[in-house]
Length: 226
Image (tube, rainbow, N blue to C red):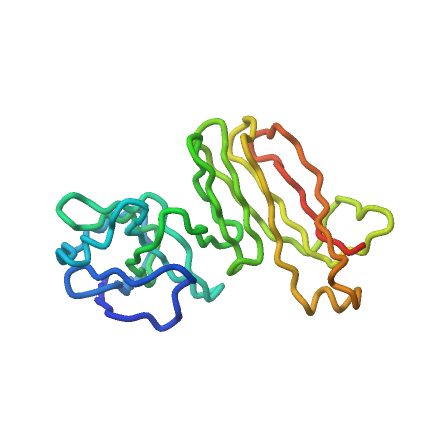
């Protein structure tokens, strides 16, 4: 394993996130000569007193991993900012990790088909595809949710609507009631134009269940135009 400290990023961070310096670096490029990461935990150098002082009430120090395949960042669940001003991060694979600060309420950047933990005590706002889809969710217990984007679905398009060929399967790991679940989709102008010249009449339609079964759909959502 080779770890190379970085003081900047090659690809801009998501909106509302800023680099957070620990020691003399704000990111780490981690590479392996062979094999894959089975389990690893990283503890950083301490942040300076000035940097640590920026993590006030309502702020968070966090870690993002850059995903090469999607060319986007994804949030690392469970990263912690410790009393000694260090950060502890679980590493699940090699790659570039950026240490960041942000408001505690910003949408959590996430890659499609990646599991994300939910909370029973607060609503989590999860952003997929650079803000293409936003999911607000609170579950009965701490759970795990996964959203997968698809180009087809068994869900029929409602009569009088025209599908734009965008579908999402949203699943909970374990069966339970959803305390809050809201989907917001940002329509792509090109996709809308392909089927309708009046994007102002676009709507979201979805089938919804208040209970889910393990590895079964919570929502199957299809996006269409009136």
